[in-house]
Length: 421
Image (cartoon, rainbow, N blue to C red):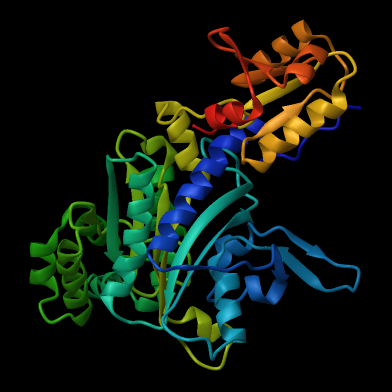
C-alpha cells in the first residue's frame, strides 16, 4: 500500500523551503517597517467561532474542515487569519488602539485544488483595529503593496470597491438590501464561472431585476456613480479613499472596480483585490477590506477594523513561473571532509565555522573525498574543506571552490574571512 499525502496538500523540498522562507522573511520585514506587530493564533478554533453568521458566511462554512474532539466538542481548522484575530481582540478588549497586527500562517479550506489553489495554504495578513479613517485602510494596503514590490512585482493592480455603496446602488435598481449578501456571493464568482453562470445562480436564489444592475457595475465609473448617487455618504468616503491614496503614493496602484465585491460575509464597506497583469489564471494574489462588525460578533461591542492579505501560494507560483528570483539549492556554504582519523579535528573546525555564522556541514558517513565532492555538487554546496592529517599538522586546510575547482590552502581565520564575504 502506498501512503500518499492528502489531496490539496504538498510537501516542500529544502530548495522550495528556501524560496518560501525568502518570501516569508521579505513580507515579515516589510510589515514590521510599517509598524505592525506579529500575532499568532491557534490552527483550530471552536466551531461556533468559525461558523458564526457574520464570519465566513454559508459558502465558507461548507468549506471548513470540521471535527469532533475527544471531549465531544465541535472544532474546525481556521479558514482564514481574520476570524481568529477578531476573536482574540474580543477576548482582549483593553488592548491599546489602533492595534496594528500581522500574521503569517497556514489556513485550510475544503476547496477543489487548481492552479495556485490548495486545501492547505498560507496567508500573510496585516490589520488595523480601532480606526474608522480611510488612512487605516490605506496603511494596510500600503504594507501589502510594499511587500509585493520588495519581492520584485511591478505590474499589479489593486482593485477597490465599497460594498455599502454597492448596497445603495442595488436599492436603486430595486434589489432589496436583504438580498445583497447572496447577490454579492454570486458576483464574487464572476471570474471563476462567467456572467451567464452568475446570472443563473442569482436567479436560483430568487433575486430579480439584476440585468441592469450587473451591466452598470461592469461598465460604470465615478462619473456614472455621481449621477446615480449624488448625495451618498459612502460615495464620498470612496472618493476620499481614492484621493488619499494619491497623497500616500498609492494612487498608481488603485483602481475603482464596481464588479469586485469579495464573497466573505464579514466585509462592511471597502474591499480590495490585487491581481498581477498577465497572470489572471491565478486569480487574486491579495485581498482584504473593512469589517467593522466582525469583532462585535465575539465581544460586547463592535470595533472598527480593516486589513489586507497576501495569498502566498499564488505569488510563489508566479515567481517560479517568471523566474523572478534565483534561490540557491541549499543554504549550506561549506562541507567539511575529514580524511583518515581526523574527525575530532574536523568537528572542531566545523564548530568554529558555525560560531562565525557560516552554514556548515560535516561528513557523517565516513565516505571518501570523491564521493563527498559529488555529494557537495548534488546539493549545490559552494565549498568543500578537506581536513587530513597533513592539514591538521600544518593548520592549513584545503578549501575547494566546487564550481571553479580552484583549491587554496588556508588557515582557519582566512577561511572564515573568505567564507564570510
